[in-house]
Image (cartoon, rainbow, N blue to C red; front, side):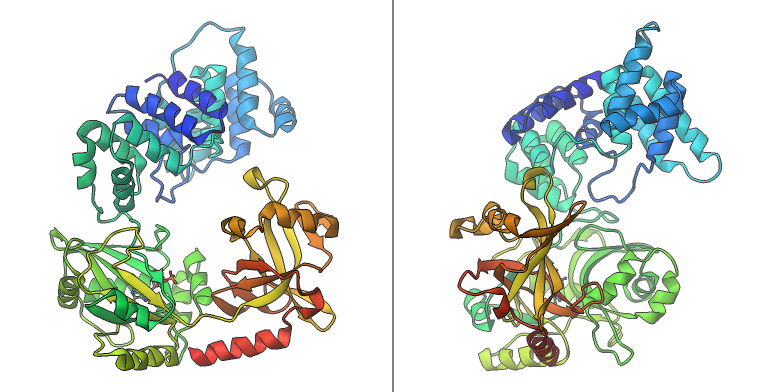
Length: 560
Ligand code: AMP
């Protein structure tokens, strides 16, 4: 396929805001794309060359692109930088300069999707000495063959800033439309293999039948099963007749994939964290008997005394790129395993949980406190369940997960019928909005996030950032627009995008947990704060204060 066809499609996508129209445009292109190119085209449509879950990057900086434009057009670097400053978009710069150059030269070779994809993949693989030169050649080769419009999109794709507004949902709808398959089947294929390139190809060549066969792949992440929140244990008894209760460990979801000696570790957000946890890799190699398997579990960080540490601290290990070994020693982890997705040649997702549990038990050599099967109980009655719940909290865990022993494993869905989470709810707080950042895109004119403040004598100190929760409350009359209207007259300081407000507006906020944090001046941070309502009946002086938060923090620790 000519790259021009793709570039023209980007232009069409650019010209409409409507999601429906965008899906139709993408569907039209997918329909006419040959099956041997559809994977590439689908990925390029959302501005990528790697599947959604991959953290591989093309890894080219603006500076190098400027040099490549110079090489391909003969324009000077200074001139390119000058042009770039006018629009802030190197895509446009390349387009304009190639336009000028084309007027002087004869027509050249046609640029194909294949060549663009090949060169981009090649770019991502370059490292070490001589790599800059090679990258320069790869980019300028594309630019030399490109028409002006093509150059714009090649450059934007290289810089990973395509900006034509094709989100995942649009690709999903377009695949369904183009190949007349059910949207839900496309979505569920994506839960198992988050790669729309492969999904589009399968839909084109094998239709719904093929999509239904798309399963989890060893070595590639998938959307894990999730839990629904219920108020208390009674709900679990009402929902499931065949009930299992398990400790809800407060750590990091970990999906262990193993093929022979090779081990991969993924998080629930599809991140590959194998490199950051060599200690877990070693435990898996030694203590999992299957040659090939995928196991689901939770890794918890531990104190020296073996007590769970807050997730916040464990998460520093996820972000760590250097001194990994040192940190493994400083923050040891405990791995709790609770499910199996694949074991030696067979997917186990269609089996009921009680059978999966048997398979899991056979696969794992347990080491108490280090690498073990999650602690569970099949309760006789509510009293026994309550005792188990209290025990979990006393041990420092978050609560319980209730599971239906008859349920299958469904990737990516909050299966009513699958897992329920039960944990103590924290009392809501009344806090003052003291700052924020202006919103962009859909949120232009309103806010991207708001800073919450607690009272400390006559001061208001930040203790958290509110990102979402307002849109859902539209029915209750408080929208982001409404908040913007009452907050705008209160702006007292603006610094770039950041704003400070006169502390007047009080809101009620729910949250998951109070954490100690040096990041905020109050010394506390609320985890996942959510907007509940405006407290127009109260004023800033009625806001919850630092002493109250201290008490709640201690109570919460006592509960755990
Ligand atoms: P939440 O993050 O509050 O939605 O709760 C669901 C999360 O609890 C899962 O994604 C796991 O990371 C975690 N979890 C801890 N213990 C268990 C368990 N025994 N079974 C399933 N999930 C667990």
